[in-house]
Image (cartoon, rainbow, N blue to C red):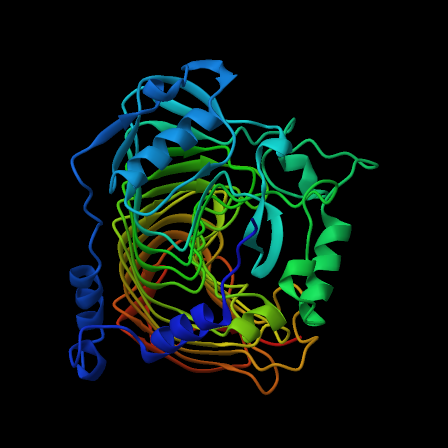
Length: 478
């Protein structure tokens, strides 16, 4: 049976998200916005599970890397949920599996030396209701999926291996200019036609149950996707070689990503894409990815506006970003809006990292983006600019919706090598506004900043190449 959220689900969640869920009367009226970040850290709590264990080998799983154990894992999860919850244990060994579907009150625990090796056969991923690049559809199940579940977790020191490679999954992207060999050659099938069809269906408001893709459409599944879930913990595990996005919580509340080691340089291998989430903590994670390390999203174009739920109340701290298009990114699937995103004590450094802090939007998306607070950010090397605000992303001005980006506050960002300090390009009639840099330094700068359709950029105690500046030297419009 294919599931999708009811209108009641969306109305209920949208109403709560629109209210800005936080402890009553605390940070909302406080003059220091970082009090709100403290509230997020205090409020978001990991789920607690009964002290019961269900070893998947008791249900017939063999850790030989060859025997398909999908049914054994499903049986262990079912038994655990039926007993009232607990821990499903993957012991040491390599277990070949298809899609894993979590249920409420179940913790999937990968012991030391355990690997869940996900099958490369698309037939092992049944059709489910999901989101793909910000649009609802029926498509292959994510490798690990949960729908409308409460109290779920993936924990341990083991590895989840999606087996994305030039031989499997990645070639479905089609043309791509990334750093990894992804296997596609001219004449091979790819996602482009189906992607365009899906996008048009969303614009035409075709009912979701008629947006059926899967076999022959080449839309890669994400790795881990909890959908409409509450109280989600993903902690400690290594995540490798995703077919597509790595960790993609959608319409979830109270989410923790902690101590994750995420690596995969394939196309669209975003580290995590929180989409229309409320109350989320991302801490102590390492990202080495083929796309944005963190990309906060809230739906694409008409679908994002139809659902209309922003991402908000997200705290990112003590994370490490290596390769990727952007380190801490907002957009571009952002039509539902985003607000109150905080980041602190993060390190971003790689010659293959394009931007440290990045915002992406355009006039097809629209959406209100406001209240972004970043502090104590260490940037080693970035290829392009330390900070980028881009309303020309993809389709740029080819739309009738006004993107809004305002109130970006960055304190104590220190960059050792950034080609530019700031590349901020709004649109005519839709400027980026209110960017404040305080106590920041930028070295290795060789190009002037780009400031187009950007208003109210303020600097306080900012140094560029060792020289104190009160304004950025912008590249003049051509």
